[in-house]
Image (cartoon, rainbow, N blue to C red; front, top):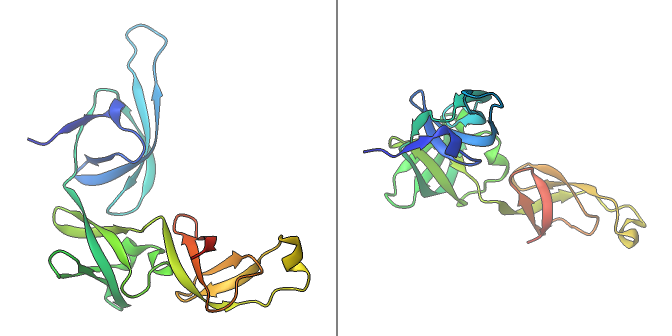
Length: 191
């Protein structure tokens, strides 16, 4: 039998099934009434893992949800074309395809052969989970302005091998590998 999760126990990053779709909790807020006989309410900010839609919904504290049939499987990025982005399941060596809606901005961080985690819901791929940081090569970096390097302040624009543009410190040169945070697309240091 499937495990049931009460609404009051749903915290940030909890996965649950609601209206036959998998959801991830982004934030939760519990409201306890001051009057006698009032019900405790749980306000959840949730993301639909199939559509990526984010919204807020209020539930009673004792509402119950099933755990979704979600799996995280290791996969490597192969290539993208008109049909979508293709990944190789590292366990079954099956090619899995995700459309642009499922990928989002992940292609900014993916190079051929990159290892990621794919989400499967009821056996079908629905999205991916990037690592916290990726290492990418700088394809182009603006020349540093004179005097910038001594003060340590200031940044310049750099374009990475994936086409992602970001601000980097003046000492970063073309051909160097840099570490990029996938959550916000910001420079995190040299690789």
